[in-house]
Length: 249
Image 1 (cartoon, helix red, strand yellow):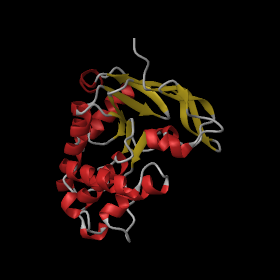
Image 2 (cartoon, helix red, strand yellow):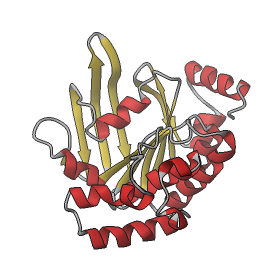
Image 3 (tube, rainbow, N blue to C red):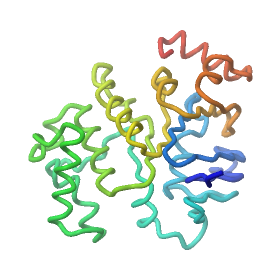
Image 4 (cartoon, one colour):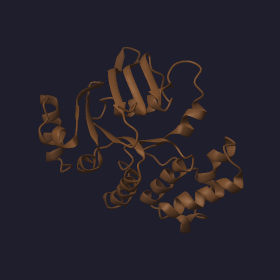
């Protein structure tokens, strides 16, 4: 059996007395898509930030392709080349063009020359349907266009895995689908992804595995047809009733 690309063992994270992540174990196979669902405050975004080295863990261990990536002495710049992350807010530099936003990371980290970075950027912008906006500035783009640029910027670093943190939550409803279509394309091309989302139908469609987080723990996990169709836990059933009533499922 192949080793998972990402392995989380006994992960614990607290802010003072507040326990945010409470003993999470999770394996993510290469080329799979895993969705984290649950109410706000259940620990989904914090878990992603721990994986990318943006938050330290107090317990447990994280491995990426067999290599420990948690604890002291980790080169987080190198780590973020391997594990890309896209956030709710697009985080584009407003004073830079789309092209310059895309090349700033590879150029400043010396992962490639400016010429190579620009070539990669234009190829990736073409892939996300944004090449014609290469010279535009963020305030000239819609929210959906900015989020597609943010995804392209992350993909230029050629990560082995992608973390997506509620990437449609800041978008107007009519712009959500264009971003989800892009994520769907990445999944079809074999990108390993761990995502948090309130788009339950999308999670049901795209995921190989769905994890329901509750109070910092994975309370239930399984294939989407089981978690959404026949949830075992009362808290999962209650959450899904609420999202169904809100028109999310």
